[in-house]
Amino acid sequence: MPKPILVLNCGSSSVKYQMIDIDSEQVLASGLVEKIGLPQGNITHKTGGQKYTITEPITDHTEALTLVTRAFQTWGPALGDAIAVGHRVVHGGETFREPTLITDEVIAKVSELSGLAPLHNPPALDGIAAARQALPNVPHVAIFDTAFFATLPPEAYTYAIDRELAETHHIRKYGFHGTSHSYVSKKTAEFLGRELGDLNQIVCHLGNGASISAIRGGVAIDTSMGLTPLSGLVMGTRSGDIDPGIFAYLERDAGMDADATDAMLNRRSGVAGLADGSSDFRDLWAKIKAGDSHASLAMDVYLHRLVSYIGSYLALLGRTDVLVFTAGVGENDEQVRARAVERLAGFGLTIDPARNTPHNTEATIISTDDSSIAVLVVPTNEELSMAKDTYQVIS
Ligand code: ADP
Image 1 (spheres, rainbow, N blue to C red):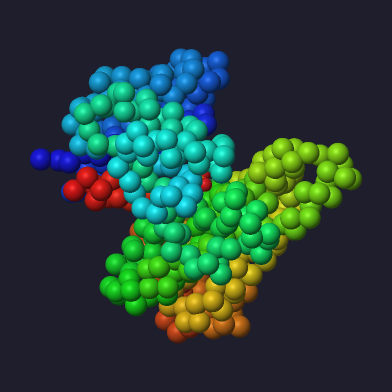
Image 2 (image 1 turned 90 degrees about the vertical axis):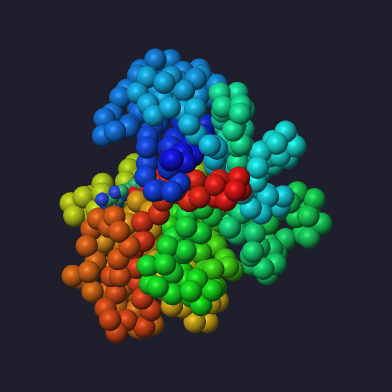
């Protein structure tokens, strides 16, 4: 008997979903509802090697979930077979340190955390409400992006600012992409045939959003994202680390209020902000090849920041066994990996060009046999990780 679990990832204007059989780890169906709240939305549903689409206005997450239910009814598999639903929730604050069975009380607590993640938590709550209505008889589980980083020590999560203010407003480093860092670090140990507890890892999750973590024996000790998913590495459209003084300076010098600066740092920064538009690394390389100096600088800034973080985590870990690349850029962009590791030659890391191939769908070692630290590509799978977490909570 298959044990299908539905996993849902609700963004402000989209819902991504997968139905996964937990025993075979097979994806039974997957789909995406896009453009919620816009004049014309659509749903793409994939199952049994076929792809189906419906286009119609989708006003909110309740309608999106109705459409998802309809897609399963029309094209299968039977949604009623799902034994549980796992929901991605970005911010678990200080309250949620592990995947949690959803109750009315949990929903109330997640609502209280919406101030910490105004763009992310409200759509997740909408999705949870709609999904509980559509599937009232199965357990629903919340999986928090921040949970994996609940183990950070105080010296890593504390910002050196007014202590009382920080305590009152819950200002500290939380870390994000935890599902991915957790999944990839476990997968790495499994692939190498090593005990997770014996392995010190630096995991680079380089997607549109990007973050890096230092993991000692399976326990996260530092990560680059903070109170919000804005800090740390240079990203597709997000700045990553900046001088916090820029906020006050822009207010005084450019008349930009906090919202305007926040929007600029989230949406018009990163490689897109530096290279005049695209956040896609394929476009960036094409521009670099064509001699675009802005794109070249964007890549240099991206690599400089990435290598600075890797260096700092090498220092924090003391002994590092593995450097792992994952997510869209990390899995597919061999040039980013090669250029980053090239800059770490002083630490004895070397990549084997024959092993460093573009598209990695399986875990692969890309370093030379005599590299001081093994360098790996390990594809992330946040949906499978969520399904496993959900199953663990209900078992
Ligand atoms: P997210 O989940 O944060 O939206 P992904 O992990 O899916 O992001 O990564 C998306 C990014 O991966 C794209 O913006 C693009 O820059 C990069 N990417 C995808 N495929 C390739 C490729 N073949 N070469 C280089 N970069 C790629």
